[in-house]
Length: 86
Image (cartoon, rainbow, N blue to C red; front, side, top):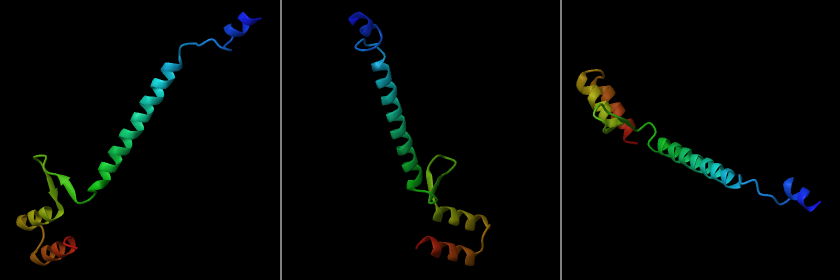
């Protein structure tokens, strides 16, 4: 009777406990990485974007560039500059 209980899982370790613990640890690390990625993505949302050379450009630089290209006139430039300085 004693041998029967050991064979059916009443004290016999199947050896998969460490595998489950490893999977749980990997899921935990994955959740942490996703949360960090989300928080970094929202940190400067809307204020900076990568430029062609990889450097970040702020919104005022974009407005200056648009003004220099003639895409916006002086009044629009001044209004945008005023709005962005708030």
